[in-house]
Amino acid sequence: MAVPKPVNREDPKTAESERLFAPYPFWSFNHKYWNEMVEKYSKLAPETLRHYPLEWVKKPFANARAGLDFLNAFALNHADISLNAINSAHQRMPSFQRLLDDGTVLWGDEGCDPDPCNGFRMVPEWAPMKGVHLSFPVFFPPLWKVYRDWIRHMDHVHTFLRVPDNFLGATAVAWLEANGIARDSIVPLRSPLGDIWCRDCSPLYGVDIYSGEPVAHQIKFAGFSPQWCEISPDSVANDDKFFLPAGFRPHRCREIKIDGGNLLTNGEGTYLMTRRVLIDNAQVPNLYAKLEHWLGADRLILIDMEPGDELGHLNNIKIVGPKRILIAHSTVKDSAIDIYLRKIRKQFEKMGWDVVDVPFVEDHPHRVPMDEHTAHGFYANSLFVNGRIILPTYDLGKYDDQVVRIHQDAFPEYDVRPIDGTILANAGGIINCASKEIPDPTKLRALAI
Image (cartoon, rainbow, N blue to C red; front, side):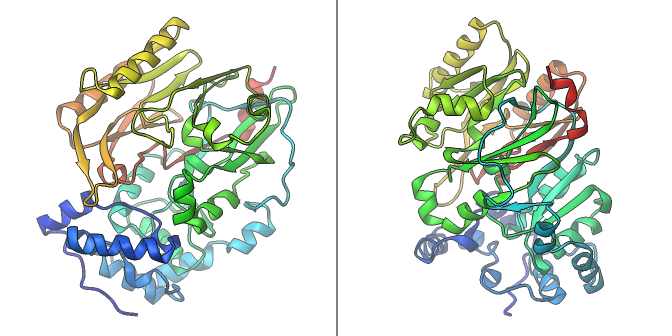
């Protein structure tokens, strides 16, 4: 295996290149698209291209030496990780087949009820959680330290960490442990990988309000867009098939498509979605009734898609209580997004909801070299988990400080933990998009009728 020239992270060019790094799951791209992307990067940003571990894309990590070479090539091995540490992690981690055999994970439709639970109600983000599901960005070296810091901030819950079913997955776990992550705080899930956006493709964890039984509804993953399904079919298929039941009775819907980044709930039967769901399911008869059935919705609110986001993600809106919602305001007055967010704010104020206001920094864009994504200051894209708020910041000075204070004042019962979201943002999503909280199934009976 050829080992590239090691990355020098002391070089100022390296820091800027990492900020511009766009973490796509290129190992599952079709060859035509990937070749075009590499050609463009070679011309526009050759320094950034050095951060893509191309040498390992199609070569298996057959042993610990391959993992160690990977760490050394990308200046990740500051903790002197040994071959023994990687081998030990590999031996301790159950294989994908074992996870399937014992029911820890499901793959495809097998073992799932094809009909919805009649009493289903999705659990809100502020309910008691036993953990958070993340997919580790194994082929995105500039994000390793971001995820390490993130997992440190969640040391009060378990991190269910999806990693490759080979020595690269073991290398990632060994690296985290060597960098101060407690061994018992991580639950490694060796499996085929898709993209890193867990929110978009994870189950909807809920409770049967009549029996108190934990129930998970896994609805077919919309796959972002037809173009993305064509560019990266393996990634979409892997994310659609993977199901982490986590102690919840599994149900799987194969008719309706949903992108989890388009869905919010208040935990009391009210759901908020963008009209992207209508586009993704244009051929489904009686869609609204079927959505209500699978969501257990007493009230389903459909809103317009945010200007400029064809995927329909709720980037600047977050439900934070039964009748409380966080809605951003743009720093560019009367821009398309500003007008859109003012409309949503007025709608929820008329419904009697308490609105928490945060800025959306639209006038400080940070673009990747190919101009495929623009990373603004999406401060609403946070994660609330068991008394902590994992809050993205963007090296935007006064705005970062202002948003931290807003969260501390609006949520005094929470411990606010800021982390740098700049690199992650260049992939088109932030903290909430890349995670999925998993409720504690032993504490759901309080939500039953």
